[in-house]
View (tube, rainbow, N blue to C red):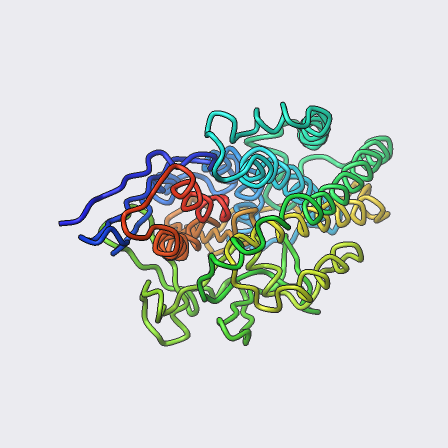
Length: 448
């Protein structure tokens, strides 16, 4: 009958999940699965609500990335009502989302992931955490807290709320940006960019090098999804959806056509739906040797999918990354490295937006009349391509909704990564806390 190993809860992730590892009679892994409760019910209980209220409701789906749900929802409602925000309104939306990205990546790298590398995957779990990092390097810890606080306060001071935002409105944005606000935020983002550059250099020199062999060992072969602009550069707010096959070939499509490309599968052991690339005509399979329809989202997926980064410092980092790991890079733990490249991009792009003269234009909102329609809004959330799809009736009330949340794209590949890590690390029944933590690391890389 073998033995079942249960890891519950998975630590240092932004939610609740567990891992079941089945050993055979020889003590080797025969199967491994991750279980998570992803059901929120928002698709159902926003039905009947006035569409313009929904962007303020769906931000409650996630307290870590509420800005992304807020923006995707606003874009979907814009589509339902057939309105286009003025340029300044759109840029203020994008600016807030971009700053939220910059804050989120610091949260994950330093507070959740770094302890595995800085303290070590085999260290006692009592010190393998952010408190352990703070004790080991208190000066760095203070700087990290300061930078996260700075980003949160930009969102709160300008837009009213750092979490569960309300500033995005149908047709645009709720308030213009004053010149004094622009200058203050610009100075803060320039400081954050300096820290982003320090962080990626620190990681490349001191965090990742001792674990390169571990990084190279945890590999699954999948496709990838991300958003790119008309020139193929990564874009976190708007653009075409790009789906890349494991061999690096790709197809671009408009998000309104996502149902032609993405199917939604359910396994009987999971509450979470598992999107797959149905247009590959392969079906769905989690077989490690022959996966079908499986693709990944989030940071590594985006920097694989894009042809280039749209900002110079991030582009230089991407070139260095690809020189070392190729395109597409398939090693799961490289999500952390990719996350830091995106951190540089987010800070650079926020500075670009703040230097755009149009950002302080007072024309920030288009007049809206509720009506019947369908709108599909998409942005890149930290955890992946986020899709909100709404249909309204003639009174502007939601009659149907579908959402594919960033983490949802990765549920299937996380299960593959867990199984691959467990099979690689657990041999002949030999298992300890350090080995089980490395299996958890395969989950943490995705920041689910």
